[in-house]
Length: 275
Image (cartoon, rainbow, N blue to C red; front, side, top):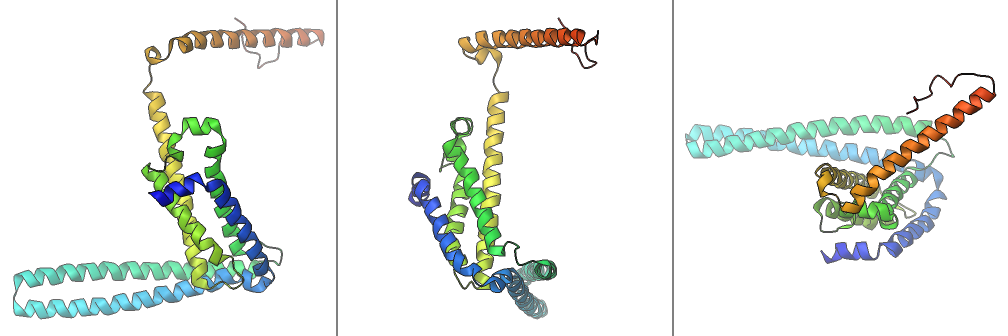
């Protein structure tokens, strides 16, 4: 818990400093524009190769599980056969998941190749886009630090012990840790992939924490009754409603007078009825 509390208490200097370090190190990366532009394509190829190796390994394990199940079946050991069948079912699921993962990796590779071919020299580099997304998540979270209204309305977003907030802080810490390596001069494809996944995890975790805080706020508001409100508030609300209604009537009178002076004779069609 202490590392998370440290993030919360010292975020004001950690985030800007990290952003500054990332900007300085990224300047060296942009000096080699072509390498920076193709890092996403290289990473997609690396991901496709890794997915192919994972599928090959999963198929080998599936063949071994099938052979083991046949051998156990011949021995007529019911308990061992049940274990072998469970293992076979698990390896089949793993092989199916690996096959789908490879298909998705190949689709991403094709899409990334098309994007790379369409990229201009002045297009933002993939790492620059990731850094911008990461900074956007940080800025959205810092709004709860700087906006007193948000801090009071959604205190869970600043509570490191609240599970969704804790999950976001951990994901954000992971992304911040990987950011330095991903914004160096020479970036390996696996480093780019790790930072990309960390940024995506931080975005998802922040959205989940924000949705959770909003849901809690809605439940607390919907659970209030008029009798439960403080006495000054119950007195002020009707007066405020009356004042708003009186202001609307004054505005309607002014509009009516202006229309008559201009020769319109009648108020505009969207004129609300005056009480």
